[in-house]
Image (tube, each protein chain N blue to C red):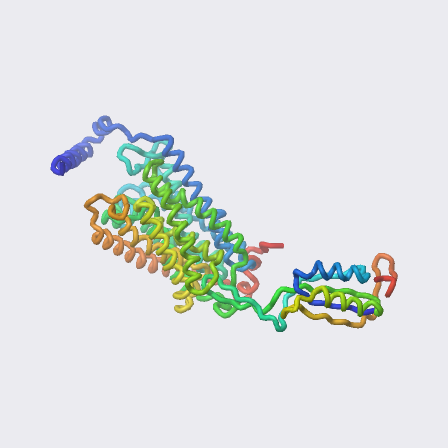
Length: 112
Length: 442
């Protein structure tokens, strides 16, 4: 099993979700996050006091899938979250040791 | 014409002397002032409009500008110190400001605990023979004392103890607010006799609160992390709501200061519209001219700066004089908070001095100009602008010194009793949790 973590632009979430459903992903976890990479932040001014925010709001998606599906998942995210501009985000793939469905106790691939 | 007026005046003085000598007969001869139900209803409405400026207006305006960990502390300090002011007002504040007798600086104490006042007691308006119930006048003026002391807190939020706020409030009202209110508005007061123009409290409320806020902030010191850390308003939405409530309530404040539902109140009303509208736009314009984006906070700040500046001018200016006054005050306040404050390095947290102090001074001095009939003001044809400006400058200068000295005393009194400032841990954790045991948002 693989854990695919993708950091994407917030407005791309719906497209990515549809693309993942298209390749057979049954579920995902989504978190609102902040971070920085090459994309610069923005400047805020309150009554003349300037603050540059170097943390940019992003969406983090976590998908656990069978090892055979991981390639398709990565491709689907890469294609759907792409705008061609700096700040499109990154995708990470990690090995997963174990999975358990809490309701039934099923494990690993059957738990996904 | 002049001669006959003079003779009439002499006659009136002679008659007054005669009446004073024969009070029983005098009472029989002069009809008691008439209480008009329309005036009374308007003044009751104005009074609760000013209450709305405090709660929830100012509480939301200031609260939104603080960090979320200090929202409740800010709102609670404003509400509590306003309540304290109301209680002190009926105990000895009213008599110090508007009681019988007394001198240049305070009135006598004959009306302490509202002694002798009944539902039949009346307070004079600006029209001879027309009065409003004294209880209404007491309540109207009570709300002014309450909002003024609450305004001061804008500079010291996010670090002053709740207990210190209460001690400071009691002392400050006693030695600063009541005397200044007497000096400007009571017929025996120093500035009133000099002929100072302050329609609704530009000097009494705004210069007074603004200067006191600056002095209090200087003694209290900066917030931890100011100005290097990111300290930004947690909800400009709340501040925007507060701004709207302040503007609406300000019609009670300004038009109510006519004390009657008449043409003077109407003039104050239209000025409170147009000066404010002009100021809201001009702050945003000043931002654009300095290479920034026109901001929501700038808009709100401009609105308040305009309201402050038009306060002394409300019934003392024509509408177009008020528009110019609002614009000038707004731009000057913009520079005061955006450039002067960072340059001098003091931590006036919510710009109580930058907006109310500076805006109040522009308004007070500007009133001496826009009052001129040649500029559309309600002054008489023989209005002497140079003389009036001198009176305004004297009044403003005396108020600045009085407020500064009084605030030093009041802040050190609070320090002696309470320690003044919260601990470093409480300040970092937020005053909501540290001082009140709650969080604003769960």
